Amino acid sequence: MKRLIEVLRMIKFEHTLFALPFAFMGMMFAAGGWPGWRLFLLVTLAMVFARSAAMAFNRLVDVDVDGENPRTKDRSLPAGRLSTRFVAVYVILNSIAFIAVCGFINPLAFFLSPLALGLVLFYSYTKRFTSFSHLVLGLGLAIAPTGGWIAVTGNFAVPPLLLSGAVLFWVAGFDVMYSLQDVEFDRVKGLHSIPARMGTGRSLLLARSFHLLTFILLAVFSLAVNAGVWFNIGVGISALLLVYEHRLVSEDDLSRLNAAFFTVNSFVSILLLVCTVLKYSV
Image (cartoon, rainbow, N blue to C red; front, top):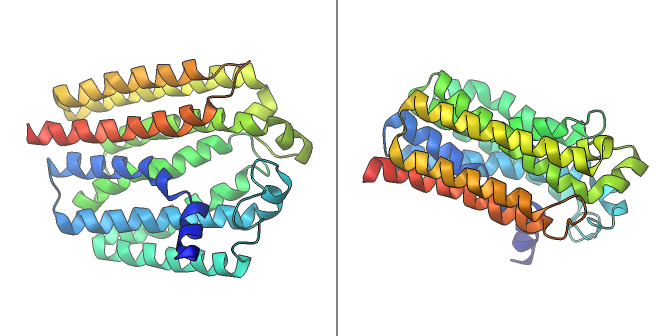
């Protein structure tokens, strides 16, 4: 039980709330309502396995860096509460489980699963060579709604790509803000991020621009699928939440950054899912 708790702490299991609701939205819009228990369970498992593999791999790749960063030195691996061998096996098992589950969804999902897995694992290396790692992270989570759509239809389509674009810029925006905590450390260690390259003020401005693109893409997606009143209400409230998120953080005050990062963004994804459910049930 202690090891299970430690693993859940390592992968920040609660952050599954960011992408999982969008996978469910992709399924519901593709199916025109409830997609059935079988697909719901399979997509849930696929999302959990992929995210668990990606987060554990990130901790494995960053173990030396995390051990030197005062903010992260108490994480499971640098603190010695989990071994690198255990985490490596954990990554492999979750990766295999993800691909296997996709095989039960449909042929296209199975065919694309190694590419999706490769993308979410690749993110862990991007801070070594590009300041746009935030966009790569966003792309990794943006797979969720299109993946949910493919799970139902077995085909690509334009509408879920619009929703994926919204997720991409939403994640990139809040990840830029989150990276403000490590600006000086990243510069000293030669790690790349937008805040380390551009400074706090311009990074916050860029994060706002990303979130404006999120709102625009959500609105275009709503028009493309005729999402209805409830979803539009969710988009409007989400926009207000993102405005509030940016009001919590300023160039001179980062003390409420964690509240902006986790609490507000969890509300955004859950709110949009609830409004999607209401569209098909009210």
